[in-house]
Amino acid sequence: MDLGLTGKRCVVTGASRGIGRATAELLAAEGARLLLVGRDAEALAAAAPVGAELVAADVTQPDAGARIVAACVERLGGIDVLVNNAGTSSVTPLDELAEDDWELQWQLNVRGPERLMRAAAPRMAEQGGGRVVNVVSTSGKRPSLRNAAYSVTKAAQLSLSRAYADAWVRRGVLVNAVAPGLTGSELWKGEGGLADQEVAAGGAADRDAAIAAAAARVPLGRFAEPHEIASVIVFLCSQRASDVVGAAWSVDGGAVPVIL
Image (cartoon, rainbow, N blue to C red):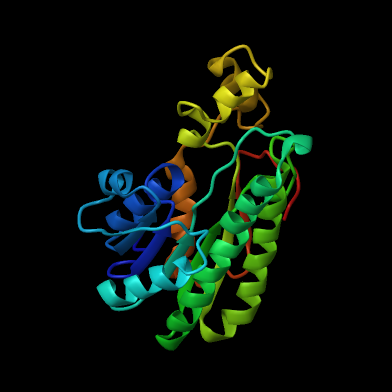
């Protein structure tokens, strides 16, 4: 199936690992042109498909959204697709979350994506339309006490996605969200990741036990692979998703037992 992404100018944040890296790889395979964003320039360069443009940036910085979109316009001649994927989490009980923890999640999951959409949407509208996909989380639909700040701000990101979808649909900018569940990326399975943090918090005997216990809570019985999430993101970026607007697609192995 031709997704109509050949030559499309795409920005992907959080592109150096996990879902972001897999999304960049699939977009490149579809013939898209890429501007990839990450905080670590070396890691970003190591992960990037051949020919991708790179911007080392922290999306929580107030000027990052405008700088990233301006770089895409300057280097690629415009912007057709924005994937807001940058983010992270930790195992932190509610009563241990500090002001800085709440602020970090707010900036990562709400203000950063909003600034990028605010910069990108008018550019897309001027050229006849575009696509925005916000990578949210099932935690935004069903809060988790693993990190309440993450869950609460992911719920806010869902609302933000819908607000931008309503505001820009008449000008051809289609905004949607994807809500992954447990995903076998570095965030969970990497050294010092959530599985190790579960062990440190006393929730599991070792990393393998933490991963197995988490997988057992998923109806499908396993973690998703990053490319499985990326496949849905790339579809929503494509011309084939021309009638999908304001949606929040769960890609979670059935973990959230509601239809939203």
